[in-house]
Image (cartoon, rainbow, N blue to C red; front, side, top):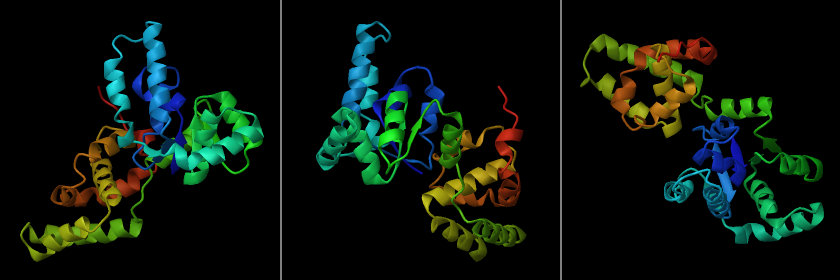
Length: 253
């Protein structure tokens, strides 16, 4: 899923505000995030205002995090968006700075996600070629959450790899040609597919975490193909449990 996020969403990643948990759903590992290069400026301005009002202490740590937004958001040049944004602003009677986010959503073929109900309503009423979602829209945000942790690996691929693991298990040797072939097959997968194998292995093993938490953990091991291969006996169970996992998992602590 592709989304364009505005500053009203991104600020909630940095400070505790209403609907912060909803804003963090947009950080799901399977979501591509976009924003114009105005985003860091608007976030810095929001932090400055909070510091002036005494809502945050030292602003420096927040500003440090703002400089890292490019690590989680694909920043688009305002020069590439300005003409469309200006034309949109004139047509709908709304400021250019908000229209930059609308133009970004158009350019990237993404959904605009905002905490600004007024902007969301304006887009819904006056901009026909993009969709807007507000953090207050529970069903829409549930779809965003699901998109952020969906499986991308083909289920037949999981079954084939599970069968390959069974052949490895019968040999009981990590130096066997069969084992090395399985490791190479895992290495040939995309990073997203390897993350899926990790998560399915942990789900199959009954790890006491939600799928979202398991994906966060999977990022640490995605390059370790031998570790992923070691979870092979659990992949089929993971597939079987996948659809109901977040409803049945028992969280501890």
